Image (cartoon, rainbow, N blue to C red; front, side, top):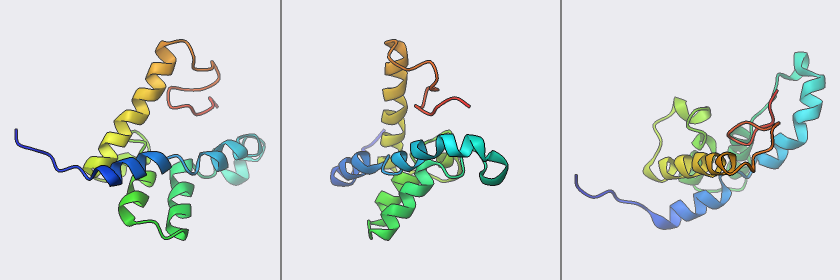
Length: 117
């Protein structure tokens, strides 16, 4: 099948920061529930806000891409993911599936760790 070139420095950096926008998303859930006709629900998911933060900080475009596209069933479905982003996408889903299989996922969260609506 041939070899796949993987930038391991990029992969590790992207994996470390892919959820940088998560605190913003979690902080807004209650407000968005109350104001959903004005803000939507959620108003902005963590990949979008995380990409904004990464751009503001001057992170490389390859890292911003991973942050923005890491939910492959969410924002990531609209772009062609890099090899490194694809690895982060599957590792991220595997993490939540393992928690769920082990009975450690809270009932009010879905398989991706997002509070159920």
